[in-house]
Length: 322
Image (cartoon, rainbow, N blue to C red; front, side, top):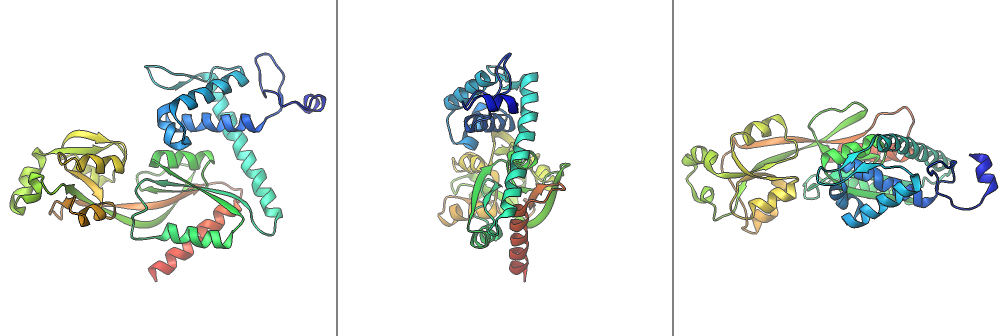
């Protein structure tokens, strides 16, 4: 590899079919980032909001990467996205590559008296309206303490946040409590309460409370495709599901049609309630709480910026609870 680099200053494709290993360019790294986002998201369409580009652009990027590698990375078509065996090996190699790059950047950052570099955070959707502003306050304080650090904030599904932290693409994530994954460290933040909501013209909105419990199972309901805590699952199973939503914003869209009843976090529904567009179903037993957690990867190697943000977050949480 060193001999090849010494013989040419050109920015060559770093792998070609039957060719020697060449230089790894910025283009190669960007295309590999696209590939990893597609894999972590589960397909081209699912990767669109993560990458901020359309499906056709993602398809072009993937084709370019396959050409530069000389390998077929995935199958795409009616059967959906599926990695080839070569794609799985490239994904594993790319994961190791970016971990090494992150480690190199951490080492360089430690040389500077003023920390610099980037901190990537992943948040589950619909957290901005939480009355507990611990993440917002921590980001404000962290940015003041580390002015040379660039903060990247990604709004993703809980599954994407977890995968991003595991892969090293995100340093810290915030997700609702669901399960515990090997390789992640979890830190409790606060509790989020969810309740049932309908529009004011829905039959449940004007029904006497005495009849709500009996009428509720017959109403059309929207079911979340994301995980709920056990108490939420137990309540959701009692409803007649006729629609589904992949995230909480989708839940709100469907409930606001006036046709469905569904669960929303109270903090998220509050603005619509204030506008008279939603009302909560007055059944105290039809509420549940979800623990919100900060997560980061378990590893022996210290990460200066991640540890700085987590220390700032702990201090903010301590001040908020005082």
